Length: 119
Image 1: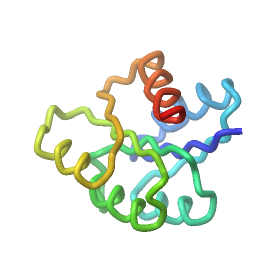
Image 2: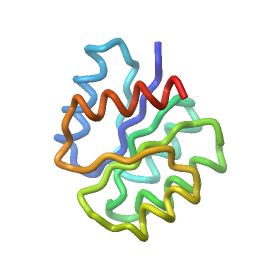
Image 3: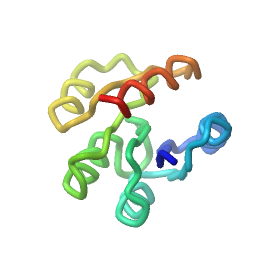
Image 4: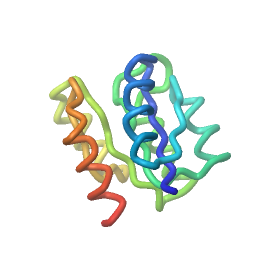
């Protein structure tokens, strides 16, 4: 069973994505901020993380950096409502493997997750 961590400060989005992937056989964890994400990464060692860029407190780019320090093998897909190329470039330099934009289209999200699990 694949382990997936969803990190977003919008609880509704977390629940929506969790239910979608749970129905597809994933074990899904939720974090509402970067600090929770780091704790879950250490405890659960997910294979893939869906990480929102813009969050209160520790933003997604900072969380990405810390996650990669914990485990470089974790695949991280950035989720953004912004067309902020500078932030995305920084995320790629720190080890993000992909990104998807909000509003989330579940088919695209599923394709991105499956592609990066194989890759």
